[in-house]
Length: 383
Image (tube, rainbow, N blue to C red; front, side, top):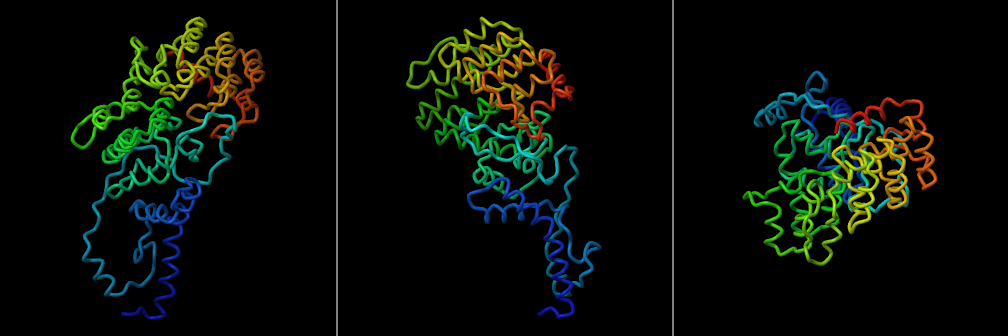
């Protein structure tokens, strides 16, 4: 039955109003993520738009006259079960501030360089806190290729957010994506997760409870198996015995990331040199902690000039690697007591004074506003 003309016009006005906010947010995410298939991405975003945020036609939000037939059709569908509100601090989508500027000389990333907001959250952080239809989050990961290791200003990955939001199905989907990467022998992306400090690789299991290491071994993926086997040594233990296999040295440094960071923290220049000069040491130096910091970030906060000087000489790429909010070592240097000597070493080695972090701040901002950097310094001192 066709809607009378007098009712159709206000109805369409209300439809346009109802679609406005979800559509604007969806288009914003398309612009931020730049998916390969923007139409499918937008359709998925609108389909999974939170129920409580959708304006309702025929309610106080809309004065449209609903026809009897439409009302009867709607009554056949059971109302969606309301979900209790969750105490999760997720930032709403808003116009974005100036983005962190990346140097063309920065290390090449295996994942896409997705936009993040000033709080360090990517679209995946927002998605992880909400429920979705089956496989929707997995599809989002495929389309957007966002790095799971991104941490927000509270040092949370999207997986951490899904746990805090009590959306277990999202945690499962994120783990399934990691398993997907490993099972397809994508060593570059697994390696980047490891270097970015992602701490949920080896504990991933498939639907039958088989560990990620066993899944990879069953598929005969020797290179991936070697990489997974090297993770405990890389993160904590240090290498005690070297695997004799092709390309394994790329993944297996002589010291662990934690050992290197501890040496940088206490100013043990000899231990830092030994770790970085060893086979695989350059990879180790790029490894980030759970705070999103490399050994150079740690050395700057601890104000050990000799360690800083060695690291920028041996691994100049560290000058361009940002922390969880894309703050470079030069950003850190501007907020500590030895600003003059440390900044001189960094700038002479090639540090860029104009690079901005996710909050749009250049290093000089922290010269006058030291509180953020001093807080980071305190975190490292009690680490």
